[in-house]
Image (tube, rainbow, N blue to C red; front, side, top):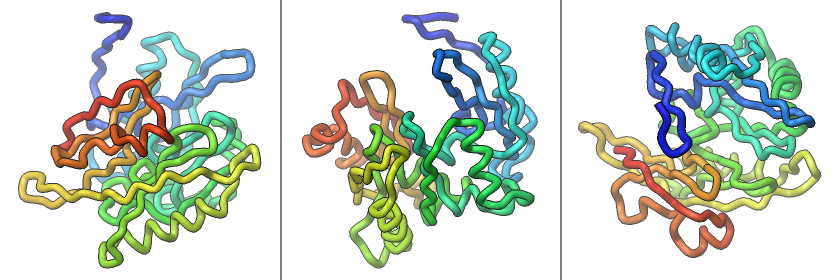
Length: 250
């Protein structure tokens, strides 16, 4: 099926987050593209079954005739954010968790990230979000590259919130970090951290977990007055996009 230049392919999966279980693409100096197929264990064996999710990267790459490189290390797409110029940000809370790669230490993980993704500088934030138990603190909920040298970082103004100290610790790392080209990071702080009711449960709507596309950005929309901060004038000055299209996230 194809519509307006978009191919729609139906393949069976177990869960909804193909960003985590699908291939991660890299491009070499000659423009050749390869899909990196990392191991997937359903966020530390949390949700069963997951055999279809663990195999979806291979099936997608086969479907499109793309080159594939299999890597045994467990890694979800939402556990990293990259700038396209050799810098990667992740969290210790997730990648060093014993339920991902218990036989690997930090140095071993860094070696594989460098060898497979072509990154040179790896910035380790201590924490993901306090409420992020499902993914063990993915970086996509607290920090995202929006351009080389520029990140959006979750912060919060209320010291009583359990995220306050965690996000301050992350902020200190970002303020002292340099990227692969030796630049200090331009940090766009995002103090908005709304809580919404979802079927009787109070959950966080994580604004940094947005998707950047060609000429636009797709942020979560919590149905609140501040649900689209990327549309505000201060944001557009530092994060210029053509279109902002929110996706209902309740």
